[in-house]
Structures are given as structure tokens and as C-alpha cells.
Image 1: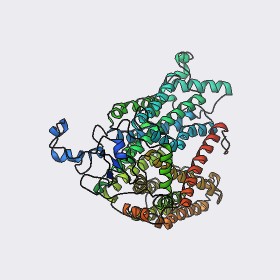
Image 2: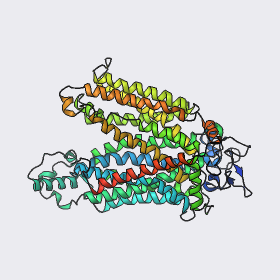
Image 3: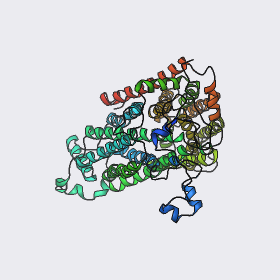
Image 4: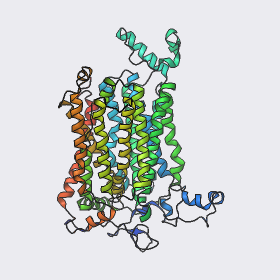
Length: 588
């Protein structure tokens, strides 16, 4: 055993206690080890959620009781009611994360192409933007231990969004992001290289006639250099992920205050906001970029973070709250990861996600064999975002009371079914549907299933976080979760060499390799169900696991931390190699 185990409480102990935690002499909530809990740190008291009769607000006067209590559920404490002015920054932060992910994706993918960036430079830009995500654990630990202006969360959330906004304003003020600047740059490249194939000319229609006027470029500035674009996107990623970690930390704190009847609704609502933003912004960004050029997209990316500032100001967080020492927090995290209630279910999450190996040649098949256009591929992506959001909403509405094992077993089997249907598409069996509609239904429903499967893991991770160290612990759990997907992607690339699934083989009509690869990846994905016994059925099972006298295990904790930090190091090394040695993995 490892010291005194940290207890996870889930059941209500009295009418005024929503999360089953004790009370200290000052009225603040404490864990069984005596440290101040998140409810004391995040708000100035829990407070009753039913205030319709006593409220003097305009909403209470204008809305009927049923509508008012739908917006502010009376059976949950006020600090968990997300539509309250003091809490609205939380869902707004998640929405903003989704919007900026959706806006920045097409911009990052397309704009470097318009600047004639090489494949290696494109990889560098993408790596720089995502590199700060590897330091989420450091961001969380820093906010847990070093309050800024007396606050552990809201000050850092404001700082993160300020950095993200500032980076885009730098890009706007110190470079010309107009379509004309792209044309001027490409024209200069043509003169230097003695002609051009016109590979990056899809935006030129926005300024008809400019190429015929030799003086048209006299007032046009220079587009950003690749190094400057990379620098601003690195800053953007730094601020973006810092603010994202703060949002996750606040939710991890507030989720512990949910009553038993609605446990999980807080997270499902926040993630629904995030994926709704992604669903809306991704197609919008594509349309804006194609119609108005990159400048309009960057203006949105610069202005949107500013919109959340008033909400962060209203966010209720106790100033100068008690903060445990770094040594105490490290000890708390070590005790947590040594608990079987942590390393066993997180072991399942890691193994399951590592086995979600996709068919890396699938997109090439859709383009080369089925002749899908870029618009059709974009449509598949947009529909996938919509179905992912609907999956989140379906879990919140219908499946939130299902056992976690039932959710994983049923969704894994369904996902295996839809993956197997890809074999029929490869063989041309579509039951009278067009290949596009068949692929649309196949891919879209797979993402719908992924949306249902997403939330049980995040709900479980929140309840594993020790009070006072939510930032570092939740970031640590999500790092393990995400690193497994990264490893699965690497495995999918390795499998490309097992059979001949090259573009040339597809053009020759040799599709047996695609059939074999699809069958293999489907079997690997479904095999994750073999480890579902490691996953607790419910949160009550999670508490039982913790109560096991053999729960404490230094070996389990050591392996968990080893996997976590090895994953972080792997991500950082790959990102740095992409930056300092572009093309190291074969790009040109």
C-alpha cells in the first residue's frame, strides 16, 4: 500500500451537501485528508439553486417558472448552473475553443499552400501550432500552485485568451493578408522561377484584372514570411491551450458539486458547446476564406477571444484562497495515481485508444478510386462534425445513466459494423446508393458513435482528480488519453507497408490490399472490447475499486506516470524535430 489513500466520495451525506464532502469549521468543504476542496476554491459558497421566488432579476420577472427553472435547474447548486452570470464564462470558454479550432483549421491547412510553402514547412507550421498542447500538464500544475493576482483560474484564462488574440493582431498589423498580397507573392515567384504551374492560384478570382495592371501591386504589402507565420501560430497555440486547460480545471472543480441526479450534465453541456462551435466554424471558415481571403478569417480569430473578457471578469472565484504547497500537491497526485481507482480505468482508456487504428489509405481511396472531389471530402468532414455533436447530445439526453461498460461494448460493436461496411464500398456493393452517400452514412455514423463514446471517459477523469490539484491532474489524464490516439495514428501509418495500398496500385484497380487493410484495422479496433473488464461499470464501482485494501500500488502509479511523461516527451521530440529539421520523416 502507498500511504493514506485519498478517498473519492460520490454519495450525498446531507441535504445541504451536494458532493458528499465534509465541512470544516470555516464552512468550507474539505477532502478526507483535510485539504480545501474545489468548492471552496472556485466559488464563494455553494448556495441554493432554487431562487425563482426570491430573485429580483429581470429574467425571473419576465419568464414563467417552468422556463426559468429549465435554465436554472433548482435541484443543482447555484455554482453549477452554467447560465448564471458568474458561471457563463465556463461554457463560453468551451464554445470559444470550438470556434477557434474550426476557424484555424482550414486557415492553417490552406494559407501556407497559397504562400508556396513546401511540405516540410507545412509540417513545421502545424507542429508549432500544436506543440503547446504537449505542455498542458505544466500549464495545469502552474495554475494550481501559482495564483495570479490572487486567482488560480480566471486570471490565467484571461491571459491565455489575450495571448491568442494578440498573436493574430500581430499577424494582421505586420503583414498583408489580402488576396492581392498572395497574388503579388506568387507573381514574384513566377518571375524568379521562370514560370509556374499555377498550383496555388485558387484565390485569384477575388481580384479580377489585377494581374493585367503592372501598377496594381504598388499599394499591396508583403504577405507574412513562413517563419513569422509560424511564430504567430505558436503564440496562438500557447494562449489557446493555456486557456483551454483553465476551462477544464474549472469544470473539474465544479463537477464535484453536481448532485447525484444530474452528475455528468455539466461536462456534457460544456463539450456540447465546444463541438457545436467546431461544427459551425469549420464550414464557415472555408466559405469565408474562399470568398473574402485569409484576412477575414484572421480578424475573426483576433476578435473572438476579446468577446469573452466581460464573462471572465464576472466569473466567480474566491480570491486569495488557500493553496497547498507544491510538495503537498505532488504527494496528493502521487497518492492518486497509485490508487487502483485511477491506474486501472486509465489503463483501459490508454489500451482502448491505442487500438483505434484507422485505415490511413482511406482518403486516398476515396479520391483515386471513387473520384471524390475536394468539396465532397469537405462535406464528409462537415457532416462528421455535425454527427459528432449530435452524439454528444444523444449521450447527454439518452445514455448518461447507462453503465460505462455498456456504452463502450455497444458503441465498439457498432463501430466495427460500420468499419466493416467499408469493405462493401471497396468492392462496389452499395445497395443502390451512390458511393458518396454510402461513404457519407458510413463515416458520419462512425463519428456519431464516437461522440457517444467520448463523454464517459471525461466524466470518469473528472471524478479521479484530487481536490486542489484539478488543473494538473485533469491535464495529466487527458494527456494519457490523447497520447494513445497519437500512437494509434503512428501504427496506422506503419500498417500501410503490410499490403500494397499505394495510389499506383489503386489506379491499376488492385484493391485486395485495401480490403485486407480495412479488415485488419476493423479487427484491431474491435479488439479493444477485450479490455472492457478493466473499466468500472459506474461511479459506484469506481468508489469500490478505491476501497479495495490492495488499491494502493506504487508499481501501478509508476507505470502510469512513466506512460504519461513518455507520451509528453514523444510529442515534444516529434514537434521539435519537425521544427528544427523539416523533412526528417520524409517530407519534401
